[in-house]
Length: 612
Image (cartoon, rainbow, N blue to C red; front, side, top):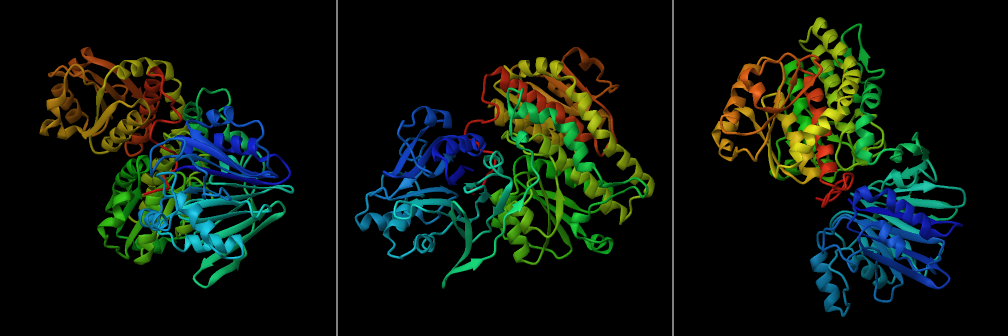
C-alpha cells in the first residue's frame, strides 16, 4: 500500500516523479506529494486527491534534479493536505516518504512533543523526519539509522536532506523498495511499474537494508546494532515489457487484464505439463518425488482473492492427491500461535509477493521449522525470495486492484501442483492424463466465455440495481461464490454475501426477497440435483435468480423464474471452478461500469497490502 518514487540525475525531477506516481496510484490514491531539492533548497508540494490534482496545482518554479514522491493509502489520520507525504522537520531540511506502519508512533510522538517539537500531522511518518533532523551523526546514513533504531514496525522509506544535496537514502523493512539504474541517473520505486519506462536494470533491497543513491550509482548497507555494514547488492536486468503497464485502448486495466486471461493461462502452463506420464513438471518446487510423498497435509495461506482461490486449490489437492488440505486467511494465521507440523506442506499465495500478512505467516512457519512454497506473480518479490521454492504465475503485470488473470493462474498452478502431488501418491496415469488434457483446454475455454461479454453485461446491469446480493455454491462451488461476492464488493460497492447453498435454510433465507437477487453456482456434477432443489427454496420466496451452470443442466420449472442463465464450457469436474469464476469477474466489471465507479481504483482499497 502507498507508492514511493525517487529520482536523482541530470533531468528535472518533478515531471518524472509525477509520472511515476501516476503509475503507482493502484497502490494508494487518497493523496499525493513530491519534494525536490534544488538551488533554492528543499521544496514540498502535496495535497489530498489524485496525482493529476497534484500535477495541476504544482508551482511553476519547482525545479530540482533530486526528488522523492508518494501516493498515499491512509492509515494514521484522514486523507488531507497535511497528512499527505512527504513529511518534513520543522526547519524543512529533511523530507521523508514512507510505506508501512510505525507501531510505536504514539510513544515517539509524545516524546517529541515533550521535547518541544510541534507535530503538524496525524501521521506516524512525521516522527521519522524529526528523529532524522534531531540526530547529531555526521553522515546522513547514520542519522537515518539512528532514527530507524528507535522505530518498531514496518517501513520502506526514501529521504532527501538539504545538507546532503548529492544523495538520496532509502531503507527497507517489510515494505518493498527497488532501485533502478539509468545512464547518469538513478530511480527509486516501491513497484517496478514506476521504473520500466526508464530502466529495466534494478536491484531489490532486502529487509534491514539501506542504500545511498547518487546520480552515478548506489551503495548498500545492512543496519546493525554496531553500525552500518556494507553489503554487495548488485543490479540485475529484468525481463519485462513496458507496454504491459499501459491500458492501451482499454477503458481500464481490469478490462485489459480480463481479456488477457487466455494468453496468460497458456503462459503459466507452458513447459509444465507432462502428457506422457500425466503429471506436472514443477521444478521450482525444489522437492523431489520422495519429499512430496512424505507430506501428510497441505495448508494454504492467502488473503482476499488469494485466500478464496486457496480454497479452490485445497479442494483440488484433496480430490486428486487424496491428502488433507485446507486454506486459511494468512492475516489471522500467525496470531493464533499455529502448530507447525514437519510433514505439512505450506503454500503461500500472493499476486504481488509483498502482501505483508502472507509474508509474516511465511516467516512464522519457517521460524518453527516448516517447509513453505509460494505461488507468486512478481519475480524478485519478498515472498518469492523468502520461500523454499514455488511456482511463478507468469500472469504479467496486474495493475487493477481487483485480481483477474493472476487469480486464474493461481488456480492453474494449484491444478498442476495437485496433479504432480497426486501422481507420486495414488492418482492413476489415466486420471493424470485426463487432467493434463483438461488443463490444456482451459485457455481456449476462457476465450469462449469472454466472447459472451455483451450478454453478460446485460445481466450485470440488472444486478447493479440491487443494493444487496447473495452468491451461493456448494463444495467446489462455494469458493467460487466467495470470489464472486468479493469482486462485487470490491468494485461495485454493492453488499454481496457468499453462503454455502446448503446453509441457506439455516438462517440466510430470512433475507431473501424480490429485492435481493442470488447468483447461484450450479455445475453439472454429482450435486446438481441438490443445488437445483435449493434454488426452488429461493424462488418460492420471490428471490430473483442468476444461475451459472453448464449447458444441458435441467433447471425444470425454474427456467421460468431465472432472470439470467450463464452456461460455461465443460471441463473435468475438478477443474470446472475456474471456468465458473470467469463470468463472475465480467459481471462485477460491468456492474461497476454501469454504476460509474472508478474500476481500477476502488475506494478505500489498494493493490498491494503491505500494512497489517
